[in-house]
Image (cartoon, rainbow, N blue to C red; front, side, top):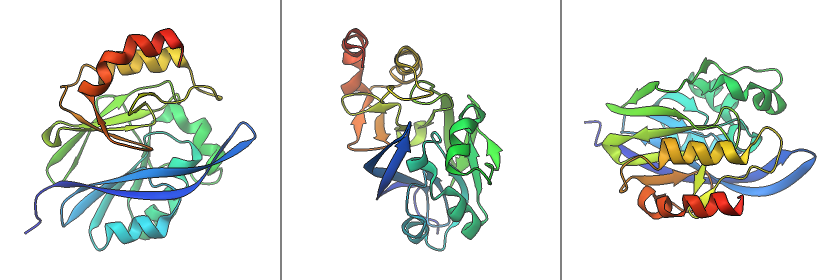
Length: 211
């Protein structure tokens, strides 16, 4: 018996570097699947910790919500150890190359794609703004959205660094995410989980503040 499909959560710690600065960060790693098969969403920092969480299950893909180095640092090592493919939206190649100049992703993510793991569909939503190739993954059967760094509890992802744009992220959140069912649980790239219902009333406020 493979057990019921479920969401597992791991926190890994390391650094994020861009534009000449480096910051300490804790990242959420999400594992979706059952007792037999899983996908990893954002293999951040620590490949050993990610591989331990996967265990002896088949890893069908390492899905990157975007290519900032904190989110993809462990992706090649996890893929090498398991045979899984690393998937990334092509618009984030420029960021990927900063982290892994000698290793390309194995396949593209495109808006509208559906990844299936343990019978659960994960729909790819292209949500640029924090990064040009940022995506979120919507799993309606689980009532879950994996938002990467596009949407957090309390606001949008940061847009103050290279390859980001505030107006674009606000449009992505408003058009692609806040239209999902209100009860959808938002599993973020950093920090606490939230819901679409909790964040939806604040979009105009964020837009007016410019963050």
